[in-house]
Image (tube, rainbow, N blue to C red; front, side, top):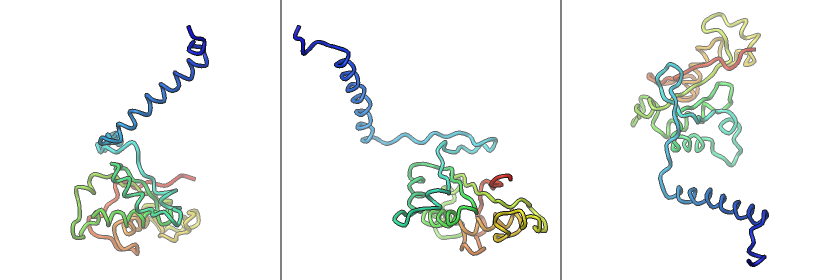
Length: 189
């Protein structure tokens, strides 16, 4: 047998690596020619609602987007990919306003011409508050809350702010029928 054709450990490893790479690459090339599989979903707690296991959070790229990147396009791309779980917060700067712009372009604003109620029902929208009192005078919260009461004195104020930013005018008004699926307390200190 020709010595140059003899299989040694180095040639075996190189041949195996090339075969593995080809096996990994060829299906990827072929997959580009067919429709992608839908994102995996799971039932969200006891709600019965199926959310994608991959969601879009409203912090990071939606809050701190570089000047040359449009955060609304990120949200719309997530919709196009089939994401149906969206999470934001009153604490994420312009995040909720960016969701509001995306929702407007997707006809998710109740009362507006072309409102797509079925599409709105197909997503799960979560927001958060740092305010602790559902109802109350708010004095203790103003002292202990890092938003210093700027958005109101209790959680209902933050809920209204979220609704206004994502479905309304961003200044306190929002249409009847606007809703958030889940409102959470951001964190416990």
